[in-house]
Length: 225
Image (cartoon, rainbow, N blue to C red):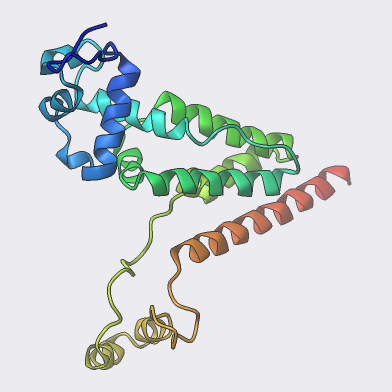
């Protein structure tokens, strides 16, 4: 085991150590700030030492995604719907700990091994829950990124409540959007309870799961006739 300049022992460099350091770096600074040089500095090694474990930044990002997805853990036991719901929400908790991960997952040109394994296990939950291959296919498409705990929103709703004058101007051109924007504000006066990302995510998740259960039950009835 090598020693650092101050004489303390340093763990030998490994792929896992490189990836864990990269994840910790991204958690604090985001992936745009990562470079092999900066990561090497974090690890106390020369940049060339990293290339024995990751070929380039793309491979580094793939490995980081796999490390994060590996934190989700296996599904629990029970009916398909509560098990699916619990695991999706577990995935969401993991991705909230690593805010950069959703963007990186979306940017990959093909799924990483851990993502493929995770999606395969989710498809398995549908199949063992009584879904046909065809309905499982539709379910996977309908769930989309929600299977991994995140969703692509139509609008950025993190901004402050628009100025009333702006809302009035908006209402003249886009009356229904203005109506929603005025009702779903971020303050206690909001008429629809405000924009709570977690509540909105669970609302959509439950709609999808309830609808898929209805389709599964209908398909099963049709097959029994």
